[in-house]
Amino acid sequence: MALVVLLRGVNVGGHNAFKPAVLAARLAHLGAVNIGAAGTFVIRSRVTRKALRAELTSKLLSGTEIMICDGRQLLRVLSHDAFAGRPAPSGVVRFVSVLSRAPRVALRLPMALPPRGPWFVQVRAREGRFVVGQYRRHMKTIGYLGALDRVFGVPATTRSWNTMAAIARALSPGGNGAASLRPPDRR
Image 1 (spheres, helix red, strand yellow):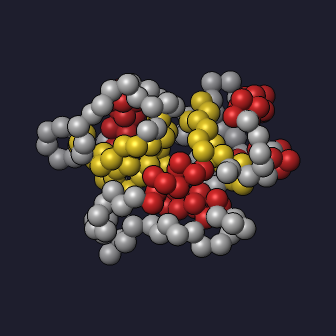
Image 2: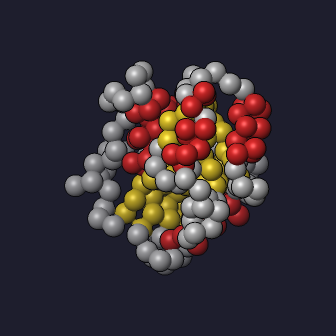
């Protein structure tokens, strides 16, 4: 099965800027598919994680965190309905955060950040290295998403549910067919 690469800390506010399409072209021999501008790639060719990490490290700016996960594991997480078929309220974005490794702490879920008052981030479920939740579109939200590192005790990188759906489509046979995953209803 394909590997999924998620880069952390690139193309954020002009920091660590790079062009994902250029990197995907440089990784064409690995069957790389670029998903968006945040540094998300599906690697279709068979390659070990160690070899892939070495190749990415040689092509990226130092300090870029590289998270690699198995496409099958990600698809399994996406197939679970953490939102129980409920539509996303207006102004709410559903997401998946990928942790650099499975955390040592077991948290009681669901949980909200901040824990008191109006929430900006809700964590609904966690399976291994994958955290599923939703956040409100607000200026304070980025700080609470950054707090997931402290909450779980390991670095995390976050992608919207729509980006995850694009990854699922790229993982499907042919890479452009409709995957079984559909974005949550936004009614």
